[in-house]
Length: 308
Image (cartoon, rainbow, N blue to C red; front, top):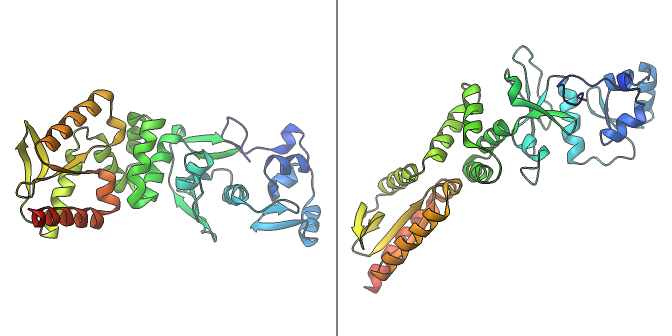
C-alpha cells in the first residue's frame, strides 16, 4: 500500500490500523509485509493461509475469504506483489484512473532499472527509471501520471491508439504535457511508436494523414488520382477527376474548432453542388482499417464510372 501523497510504502502500524481495516481499504487484498506491520505474526499469517481464510494471489500477496476476485483485486494484487516502487503503467493505469472502461488482460508494472523481477502470469514487468513528476498516487496505488499514462496506453492499443490519444487530448490532457512526458522517456520501450503518434497529433493541417493516404494509394497500385486538384474554388485533397470522386482527409479532432467546422462545411457543400461525390476519412480510419478505406474508394470510383 502507498502512503497518501508521499509515494512511499504505507505502513499500517503507523496509523494504528488493524488487519481488518487494511483488508476493507484494499478490497480484501493484503501483502505479507502489511499483515506483519498491522500486528500479525508470521505464524498467524501462515495459519490463515493453511485454513484458506487467505488465498494466495501472488507470492506474499493474499485475498481474504469473502471478497470477490475482480479486476480491482487483480490490479491491487499485482502492484503489491511488485513492491514499494512498482508503478502501474499503460492500459491498466488508464483503467485505474477512469480513462478506459476495462483493464487489459495483462497488467503492466514499471520498476526501477536496478530491479529485475520475473513476470508473473497476467503481470508484465518493465524496467524504467521514471521521473518523479511521472508518478502519482491514485486510489492507494502508484500509477503513471495522466500524460504518460495516455501516451503509454496509446502505444499499447496499437491500431486504435491514435483514436484514444485524440479523445484524451479533446477531453482532458494538454498536448504540451503529453509531449513533455514523451521527452522524459525517450528510449523507453514504445517511444518510437509514441513519437510517430505525437507527430501525427501535432499536425493541424492533416498533411500527415494525407501523406499516409497517398502512400497507401501508391502501394495499392490505384490509378487516376491526383493530389491538390482544383475544383469549385478549392483544392481537393485527393481527387479522381474522371469519376468526380473527392477524398477529403481530416486532421485529429482535438484541433477542431467552430471556425474550421464551418469552413469545412462550406467547402464540402461547394464541391457537392459542383457534382463531386465526397468520401471523408480521418487519420484513425487510415491506421485502423486501411484495407477497408482502399476498398471503399475503389468501389466508389468504379461504381461512378460505371454509371457514367
